[in-house]
Amino acid sequence: MDIPDDPRLLEYLERGRTTSLRETVDYITRRRGKRNRPDSGWESLTPTERSVVELAASGLTNPEIAARLFISRGTVKTHLAHVHAKLGIANRTELARLAPD
Image 1: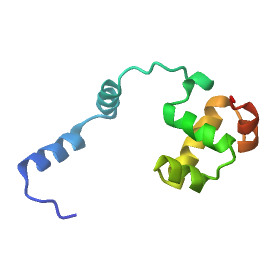
Image 2 (image 1 turned 90 degrees about the horizontal axis):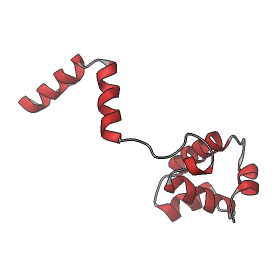
Image 3 (image 1 turned 90 degrees about the vertical axis):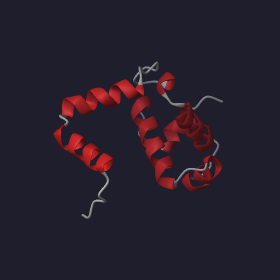
Image 4 (image 1 turned 120 degrees about the horizontal axis):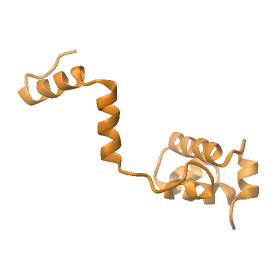
């Protein structure tokens, strides 16, 4: 890979090579801040996950949800996978049955 001769970039690359996994996790955690949501259940869903649930429960397809929320189909699929895991459900049918009105 051809790296531009920029001293700042070279410094950042070297810092990344020498940073331990523990330091990296600590850095990311500090930047993210404390989560104020539980790990599972309806209260654990992010605002975007809630929007995806609402649209999926109303019968929209992943491409339709993606267009509505201005995200990719893959992102919709990922949000649904997270929702399924957080709610302990297996599929869209269960989601539609359990979704709040």
